[in-house]
Structures are given as structure tokens and as C-alpha cells.
Image 1 (cartoon, rainbow, N blue to C red):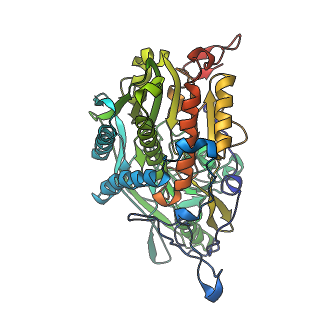
Image 2 (tube, rainbow, N blue to C red; image 1 turned 90 degrees about the vertical axis):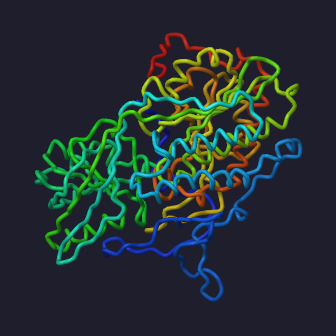
Amino acid sequence: MRTVVKIAVLAVLGAGVMACIPGFAQRGQGTAPAPALAQNAGSAPQAAGRGVSGRAGGEKLPLLLPDDEYLRWPLPANEQKYAKIDGHRMKGYIYEITAISKKDRDSGHQYWGRIAGTDADRETAEWVLAQFKRLGLEQVRLQEFDDLPPQWFPTSWEVTVSGAGKTIPIKTAFPLYHSVGTPQTEWEPVWIGLGTPADFIGRDIKGKAVVLYGFPTPGGRDDTALENGSIQRAENGGAAAVFIVLGFPGNVTNEPTAGGTTDPAKIPIFMIGDADGTAIRSMIEKQQAPRIAARLQVELKTGLKTASVWGVLPGMTDENIAVMAHTDAFFEGAMDNASGMAMMLELAQHFASIPKSQRRRTMTFFTTSAHHSPSGENASLRWIHNNRQDMFQKTALIVNCEHPSQVQTYLIQDSLVASNAVSARRWFVGGSDTLKKIVHDSFQEFGIAIYSRPEVRPGGELGGVFQDAPSVHIIDHAFYHTDMDTPAIVPEVGLEAAGRAFAKIIDEVNKVPIADLRALKQPGTRVTDSGSE
């Protein structure tokens, strides 16, 4: 069972200094407010979005702050060797990577991003390959996998709601992962609240479209409706379709892959934004006899390929430090996981600048794909776990670079309000008390905000290899799997601090024998494919 530290959306989206309060629209009015957070294009984040008067003359405050206004943790005088680890350079990588996603979107794909098996996936791998070569890594290669399992692909869809003589397009409609398709079909919508068992009592949903509300837990990947069994209840009650309204203010598009959604649904299921959901609910409340019309074309594509990219920095021994990052993403995927790839490259550049004689251990950098879709046993991370045990036997540490920086944000009334601080991250350390102290001290020194408790078992890409060697990661995770995941929500200062902390952890680990980094197996503990029991 996936074990993740979860906190309510109010807590996850707020704990720090408030920078601005944008205006808000009350729910229930049937109007579509502006996006919850600014969608930025171009070479640098721009202050954009709605705001209320907060300065002399009624000047509007920006929704998202420029990078130079974030709080910065001073670099200790005794850690100046990490000064060249540069958040601005990492942010530049993020713009290059997200440009690949936007190119995929602009080519006409509704299901867009850096999806495993697509041209954008291949272009991302080739971009990383070129960066590894530019940085002077050795044994650089692209390892192609041509044995991906059948991949679920929605290729075309449209959703509208009609009532009282008007038709409204539901622009944020996005098919839930593994949803079934449907030809053009109309249904009567039924509002089912939160989709709990109590909400379904006495409700006639047979042949109708169930519309319900999901609170993010904490972001676009997970929500309460997915996790409380509402889809199964709708299916069991004979519903013809399900529409889940994501509880981010504004009109956010998202694609979850969690909360029990790995099993194919029996009926069409769409995620929709809050404003679109409000439009449907308003028609129901006004008794306008609304009808939801939808069509969804889905393919199960076979014969798709993906790739991992490898590069090596030789050290003085054949012992190893492994640094990894996954490449695939939904939408722009700035935080998830362009930010992780950017940090991996920055670590490669930092350690490549150090003479080989000062690198105790060889460093192996690699990417994985099909993180958000099935890879099977013969591709990507599963292949690496199954076939690189010789490497992991001599690995002192696995560093997983996975969305390390996100703006700390608040839910205020009906708006998300950004701050000038970096959000706390969920985190995991797998290894001995010696390793845990190294990680703790490095996080403290470089100002890495983390949850009060670590993950019992790591989520993210580290979950597939954490038992192979001592390991560490941090993960920010509110805006991932949504179209809010743009470069504007990834602060440079968070990238920089995380990069420096990981570099310090690697340096300290290189002073310790591998045996002293591995955790002792507890008596009676049995290690299985799903973790320790």
C-alpha cells in the first residue's frame, strides 16, 4: 500500500509569509474566474493574474513573485564551495524542457506533455543526452526500450453542458487515467457532493452522469473523490459517467494517476475544473434541466518505445553514487519533473568541475521514463532495478531528483495566494542512522523545509529502487499533474538550496564506508516487492 504523508489542502497550501491576495469570485454564481495561478510563457516568469488594491493608487499586487523576491537562506561561510550551484541556471533548463511539452501541445495533441512513447519523450531523452555530453560525462549513451506494455492514450474528446437554451463548453474536461471511451452521448447530471456513501443514499443515478467534488490531497494527482471509493460507488449504482470537480479555485485542468485509478474504469470518467463544475451545479440548482454531452476516443497503443540516458563521472574507486531523474510529464511539467532533471544536471556540472582525484566514488547519472504509465519489467526503472544489481551492490547512495522546489501557497477564500517562500517537501531517507544524520544536518544547513515526519516508504520514482541501496529524496507535490505546473511556480532559490544540500550530502557520504550507510535489517523483517513487512 502506498504510504505518503498527507495533510489537508488548507495546511499544504499555507504556512509562511503572504505576498499578495488576488480577488476572488464567490462559488455558485456560475461565472468562470481566472486561472488559480498565472500561466506564464516566454523566457522568464511574469507577474500576472488578478489582484486587489494593496498599494498607493490602487496598484494591483502580482499573483506570483519574481525569483529575486523570494526569501533566501544565506550560504554559510564554510560552505562556499557550493556557491556555484546556480538556481538561475537550473531555471533556464526548466524553460528548455517545458518548451518540448508546449511544442507537443501546439502540435494539436489534447493529451499532451512529455508522455512516454511519444515524440516529446524521445526529444526529451535526446536533450538530456546532449547535456550529458556538453558537461563532459563519460560513457554517455541512450538506452532504448522497445518493449513498453500497451499504453492508454485518449486521442480526442469534448464535453459540454446545456440548459435554459445555452450551451457551455467544459474546457477543463480531461479523461481520468484508464477511463473508457464513449461516442457522442448525453446524460442528465446528478450532483453527489463529495461522493461518500452518505451522499449516494437514496439517489437515483442509473444511466445518469454523476458530478461530485474532490478536495486535493494535497494536489492535482490525488483527491478525496478518487480515494473514498466514489467511482466504484457510481459504477455499482449504474451511473453512465462520472465528472470529478477538482477543488482548486479557478479552472484547473488535471490528470490524476492515483487513488485507485490504476484499474480500468467501466464508464467514462472526466476531471473538470472548479469553475466548470460550478457552471454545471448552477444549472442543477436553478432546475434548468441540464444535459451533459461528451465524447471520448481512447486507444490502447502498442509498439511504443522509450529510453533512459546514462552518463558517468569516474572516481577513484568502482564504488558508486547514483543520481537519477524521471523525464516524462503531463502538461508543461515544470516542477514534475523538469526541476528534477535540472537539478541532476547541476549536480553533474558541479562534480565534473572537481578533479577526479577528489572524487572518491564514481558517479552514475541516469534518467527514467514511463513514470506516469506502465513500463513493465523490461523498460525504464523496472529494467534498471532488475538488471543493474551489480551497480547497486557498490552504490553508497541513490539521489532521486524529483520536483525539489515549489512556491509555498495558501488557500484564501476562493483563491490561491502565492508567497515569497519555498514550500515544505515530503522526504525519505533509506539507510543507517549515520546517513540520516548527514541528511538531517544538510537540510538544516541549507534551509530545506520538510514535513515533520518522513515517508515510511518513498513515493515517486525512488519507490522502485529504494531497497537496492541507501537512498534519499525530497518531493514537492501540490501543483503537479495540473496545467498550473509551469516554470512560474518553481522558485530558483528552492532549486539552488536543494542542489547545494544534495551536493553536501554526497560529499559527506563519500567519507563513510558503504557498510556504515546501509540500514540494518530489523529482526523478523521480511522484504517483499511491496516493501518491508
